[in-house]
Amino acid sequence: MNTADWEFELSPDDQSNRTLVSNVHPRDWVNPEPASIYNLVVVGAGTAGLISAIGAASLGGKVALVERHLMGGDCLNVGCVPSKALIRSSRAAHQAANGQVFGLGSRKIDGSEFATVMARLRSVRAGISEHDSATRYAKMGIDVFLGEASFVDRHSVSVGGQTLRFRKAIIASGARAFSPPIPGLSGAGFLTNETLFNLVALPRRLAVIGGGPIGCEMAQAFRRLGSEVTIIELSRFLPREDPDASALLATVFKREGITVLLETKPLKVESAGPEKRITVQAPDGERVIEVDEILIGAGRRPNIDGMGLEAAGVEYDERFGIKVDDFLRSSNPGIYAAGDVCMAWKFTHAADAAARIAIQNALFKGRKRLSALTMPWCTYTDPEIAHVGMYESEAKAKGIETESFRVDMADNDRAVADGETEGFVKITLRKGSDKILGATIMAAHAGDLISELSVAMAGKVGLKALNNVIHPYPTQAEAIKRTASAWNKTRLTPSAARFLKWLLAKQL
Image (cartoon, rainbow, N blue to C red; front, side):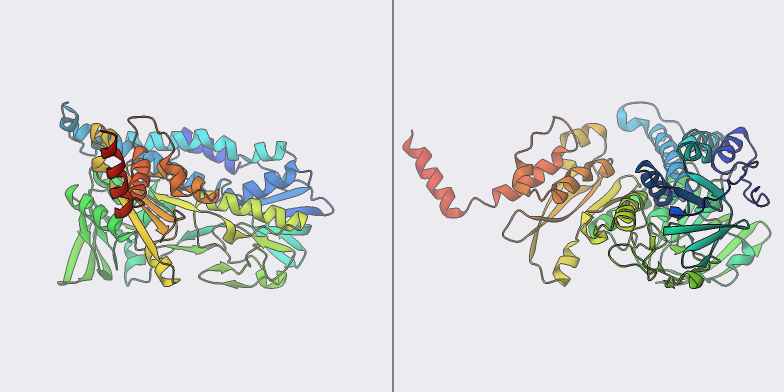
């Protein structure tokens, strides 16, 4: 059965995008004849779906994988891969424009090379797309169906006029960008992460509505590539992150020439030819912002429409998605869910980890719990902001006494040599012990550095052990050891210090 009419053209129509599409939603794909019954049917071929399908198939299961759009999901097509490619180009541009920091000449970045930057992005994405291709998964013995999935009843789903019966199913349909109900926004037009990477010309003036991870990352990237950028945020940057990190990021953004409007509400949007005018309510009153493009980074909503979840007996919420228990089981015990469609953690690595839990629990009566995971995350601004575990405020709300230890990156020799001194390592402990409750790292490579603390927490290793870990010199990871050393010094009580001083004096 041929797939439905082609609806997934990407812009521009170049070789990179043609390669991408040929891998993740081939125009000539023919869906296979369904098996009489499947051990597992997976709906959605983003990260959670791909991991679910390949994991079950590698264990010998008969698996069907259904995708209505592009295999690889948001991460490959409109998320992690293209955004990080763009961020890397923007960092190179920033370094070139600030060569004097390293004793070199500087080169002004004016946006004239934006088209080639985006061509590189598309090339990177196309090259990676082979890993998520329909052909690759079919060769692994997975029945790949391209088309809309709709549950017929509690044990079957329809795709393109064919019915797939299953023992168990995993819904991994992901989420999409949320469009806030701002009067005039829809008529004026706007960008989301789903359309942003189609651009071939740099917007001279860009407004970013939303100061979450996507908004902050893209605001900085486009500013460094030559756009005049204004961020409009109802509260503060990254409101879920450590306040010290949010405040420092705001300072960095202002220094780089980004107009930062915090505690500001968009009231309406109007079109004036090619220009868009945004009226906002700021703390100092109303004002009008004139821009060429608007990027919405105001959160995400689960993909649950048109799936026939009622027929399957699967309960859901329009905002938060499919309702699951700690084992990722839905209200239908034969159907599980994983990834953005059901989880507050909307990260690729979280979807991967959840899929592994769902496979074990669905197929082998496992009892793996989502809440048992130690989940780090990172926002890829410059400097990056990474976190794992609890924040001090969370611990306080739970009645846990804490103490925190902080070392600034300005005191790290490698960071000084690299010209990357903004940021810090902050580790929060249960008071009176070396048990790590959480940590925030703000540094140029925070996403890499946080893994050491994630491993420690997952392995129940305390800060005392990290104090004894030898780090190569000079590395930015030494800041973690120095934070551990700061804690270790507090263990030396005044009476112990007096005793040691007396003991050493006796040796003279």
